[in-house]
Length: 106
Image (cartoon, rainbow, N blue to C red; front, side, top):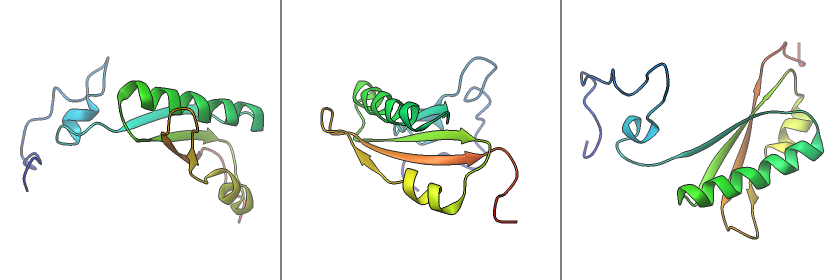
């Protein structure tokens, strides 16, 4: 398990009231996360571009855009969770919905 921390290692300094040390959590590897609330399609497109710019700033080739949404059906999840490659930065954005309300398939 090269580079991974022991399951018994003290990680108390990793998550604090003021920060989340993601590189420490993932054995020194940097992962990009952008968190947003899904408002509408226009804001979604804007969030994709912002995430790509943030990924470039971090120096990563790909970044995950986590979108909080009240409810999303399978059709829209498939439509909006498609990977996006930004033409200006070359960064790949992986949009992922986190549904905060009731499931629409019930």
